[in-house]
Image (tube, rainbow, N blue to C red; front, side, top):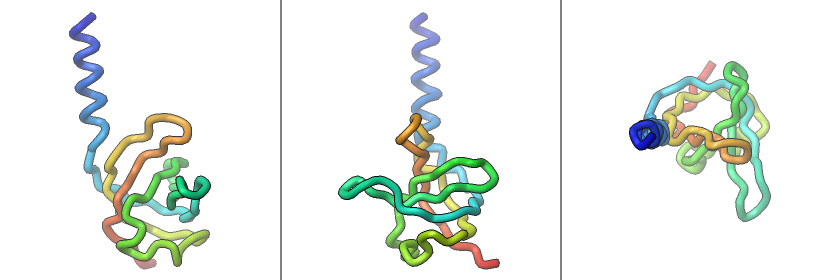
Length: 95
């Protein structure tokens, strides 16, 4: 039993910071209410919502409610409803 619990803990810790690079395409929206609001993107392919950590770096607020293509790095996996996966934008891709 202790071995299984230890293995689950290791997988959980590895999953928190994958650092995988991924391409996302979708609409950027503001979610939550002040002071807990955040910018997110809903990916069309995976049908998942991702919380954007570095919105100021690329001035992503001007792209709000617009469809964009991004390359991003996964920082943290989703924990459950209300706690989406967190990403860091690497670049905005032009069509």
